[in-house]
Image (cartoon, rainbow, N blue to C red; front, side):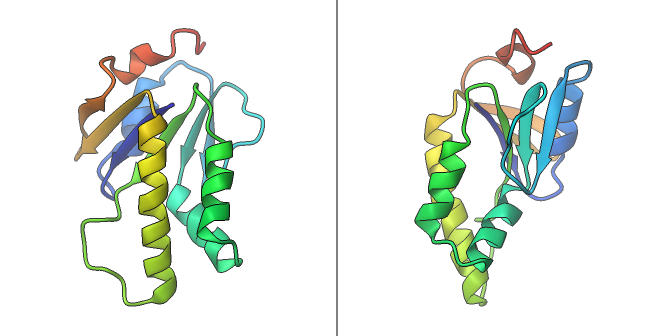
Length: 138
């Protein structure tokens, strides 16, 4: 799994789409993948976590379901929510905390982690750029 993360509107999705030009991939926005046709790209995980918590799922159940969906050949696009004011709303706070703890587990399992800072990639984990990670992706 390769994780692409950064702040909101920092160019994460555009970066991934550019890297995957000409490749078959399945895009999952705000949900976990089922059966993917091509390389699975998972985005909007934060919204999925919030929906699960609103529906009454526990943080442990959310983490279990997310980690169960992890596969080696995936790209996860994650938004960094943890550099601002702590929300007043209890659900927003719970979502922020659950997201942070899940990110720690995902980052530790990831083969590669790339931070996108206003369109500029910075490889934090793994030594290959995204385009070389999936040699058999076509």
